[in-house]
Amino acid sequence: MRSRWLLGLLVAVVAASPACTEPVAPDELDGGGDGKADDPTTGFDEIDAAHTNRTFRNYIEAALRFLERHDEELARLTARSIRDRHVKVDELVDLTCWDFERVRADLPDAGLTPDDWHRLQDRGSPVAAAIRAEIDGYMWSNRIYVARGLTVSALAATLVHEVNHVINRSEVGYYEDLPTSGFVHEYRSFYAESVITPEEYEGVDLVDYVITNYELDRTGIDPAILAEPLAPTLLPDAEAWRARAPAQDPVDDDAQCPALQ
Image 1 (cartoon, rainbow, N blue to C red):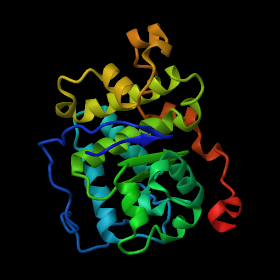
Image 2: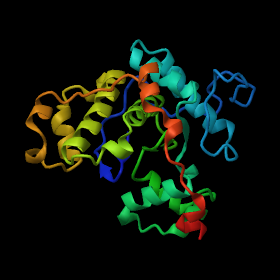
Image 3: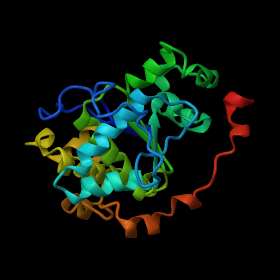
């Protein structure tokens, strides 16, 4: 598993789960079809529906099935949230123009320019490679982007992590009271991951893990939060989605995005 990023903060890697250590193969799922069902209660919505292929859909489908077979309610609710279209999922090369700008700001050392957005989907794109080298997942509003090539369990954990950010509207709440707010949002998402793949976090102190890898000032974090860091909301259930109401989020005006000027 490589790094998680949200809003410019880096975390370190942890070992991949031994239960599912190989990336899903293109035709691993039962099939013959294209992997995208017509039934609106199955499948998932992509952010850029015009740029898709069966390999990627099978990749996401394998992680969703992993979550649906999991013993934990958190896993099954995450899969249901994606099935029910509360969130959209796509790969990093399908970043919208404005989401690319946000990622570009988060990765200043990558040296990306606004015009690089037009080269994201090129075959062998160095722009895409530069982003994939740094992040496994990214979210904004109800849009989740994931890297290719993750193991099934790592991809499932990434989806759980990012859906947790979505239901808690981390793109807003993250900055409300730094460093406390940033710590709360990341601790909660990593705790959610640890429920799904506990073997990856065995012996890890999540408080220290988040503080160290996000380079947070421990002295600036509310001591009461450090003592009891797990704040609502953890489960992406119906109540959480009613409160979140992602359809009410402001819509980016792509016409104002630098790459389209």
